[in-house]
Length: 218
Image (cartoon, rainbow, N blue to C red; front, side):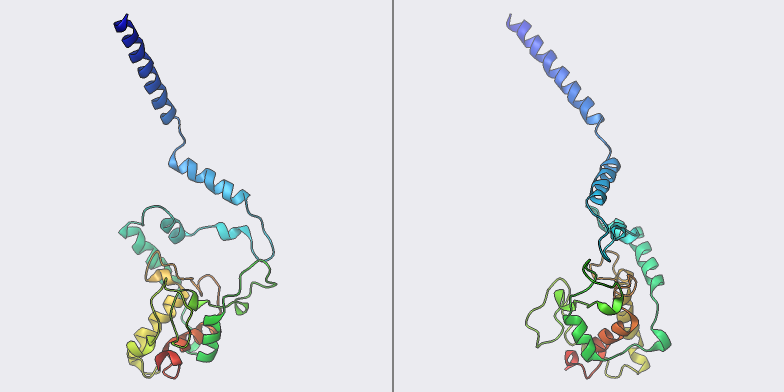
């Protein structure tokens, strides 16, 4: 009798295991689950004011950096190359504006919300202090990004018009324009590429970082 019960238990266990394996085999693939999740997310949002659902669309860099694994080295290089090609130099080679206006932009975190009446870049702030230390006089700042205090001074920029300063000027402009050109999965906003700031605003931020008269470089 005991042997009969043991055989029955073994058969039941085998049947349960077979059913479990069959159930696992019928589960949706990872790609199908991702598609379902994206559909649910899209269904949860709607256009309102200047905020439209096309903000959910991801480009190559965003897709590659949103997963649970970083992109491969080859893919990262592709993302960086595409981002580098997207950078537009300033009109007439004018890199610097007014550092005072740059400080105002760095302090300003407004813009791109659905309640804004316009999506024009000129209405937006740069919210630099959310991630960086910039000026010594500011006691509240984020630490996601590195300190930018003495940014130009540490890089030897004593005269922005000096040809020797050109590499630093070009790199800084590129970093502000499209940060993914230098780090595929950079968290920094792509101010120029995404149309978050206009050229005049970018020049003001450049002056804040690189003008020797800016308090950043004192």
